[in-house]
Image 1: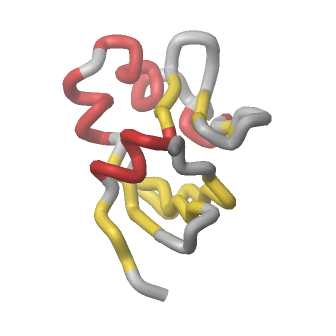
Image 2 (image 1 turned 30 degrees about the vertical axis):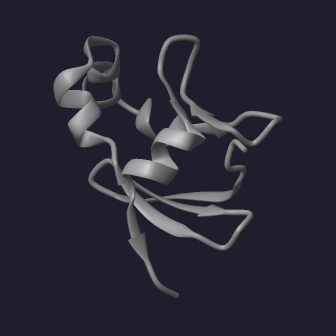
Length: 84
């Protein structure tokens, strides 16, 4: 089953706090992706782009534009779990 995102919040320095429907909450550090994936470099280089993230209608993807997105299953698996 694909994890569905309940909410996403920008917390600072290319980190997102993501809450899933099952109650799991993680911090996902996008800076690793910015440093390794060419398309993601725009998040650091294009002023204001970082703040323009959206959650898709299926709640399984956070995206910035047509070529920068994060799948919920990757965030779920690789994010650092936090407690409330």
